Image: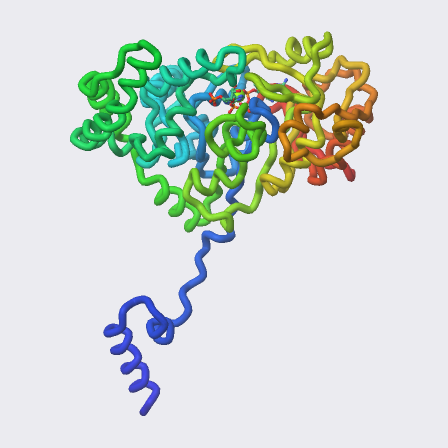
Length: 466
Ligand code: GDP
Ligand code: IMO
Ligand code: MG
């Protein structure tokens, strides 16, 4: 048979064969390599107990990207951006929203309060920020007033053992998601389904409110009025198949930034349980919360303050209860972005930082708020713990041990210099370089960027080996 004849036979068989299966491979050839596997998908993740400055660095890095995707949490987050002296406190809207070229995406792993989202968009629009490109996953779960009420009641019930949640309904909403009685954003699009699902969930919740907490329950009709009227009208244009959005971008070779909320040690699996949030902020959460596989991720940036803060209850080995702690609160303005709560402060903890490198497979660190240490004569860094008199450089897996951890400190001379106007590594005083170099050595990954003020331009590139 001639080449032409063979080609015709193969062509005819191709049409007859199903497009998949071992025979199809014989005739159709090897599938084309997908471009998506090599595009720069980056995760920004908090490595302490939140408020590290993820918003600021997300905004900075977003300049090079086409999309910023929130993958977990909800409006418990408060991400602050300061651009040309104007401050933006974001809760649900991804921190790339200020750029016209960015598509901001709220992924499937987020829990969304539609009323808060609308209020946040309104606030941004009033400041001249265009939110029309925002996409919200139809698979994201909805936070309802009964979730927030439960959050408040459970905290009250816990009394002095309370977790210090943001009372935004985050835990109860994720609990309903896991119990398979949650409502998703796409359920807002179908009144019949919306009513049916609410019927099921309120059947259980209302007696709980009435009998256990002596509170009024919730009516399906009221929730229909609140969520399916004007609210739906506002949200509907943003509801999207964000998996398709994300993958179309990846396949087109476009850069995507996954913006973590909360942090590594607030992670439901890896944090200081039960003093944690109810989602997975660690890098793996970006995969499930946005619908991408790990092979797409090629850069994971851990954000760490040059010291540590925590808001809410839970263990904190390097916590400061003295005037240095107060100084960090005052100079660092350590009050919750949205809740206004005073944050607890402490020295940088390299044991935690090393653990965060492992849990997130960090490629690098970005350190924020170095300038807050400007006036200190001596700066301490926890390099190990002593537990029952035994030194350990690793984070103890047993929480009882973690509660007993006594920090082993190394001391560094302060630089007593104002860093806030510095933009180059070469301008840094040697004491600041030494402190950063020690952090880098302790963590085992490079520090590539350092924040020296809240503004978009207040940062510099750093490497310890120059
Ligand atoms: P996020 O939740 O991780 O985004 O952080 P928050 O916005 O809740 O808290 C970080 C605070 O520190 C915000 O007020 C930021 O404007 C501010 N900030 C971020 N980076 C720096 C920095 O390098 N220096 C100073 N002084 N403030 C910073
Ligand atoms: P960003 O994204 C700091 C803390 C709460 C509480 C615990 C559980 O701004 O870093 P939750 O309401 O989530 O059930 O509360 O988690 N927490 C945060 N702390 N920054 C956050 O977000 C936080 N989000 C939740 O204070 O201790
Ligand atoms: Mg915050």
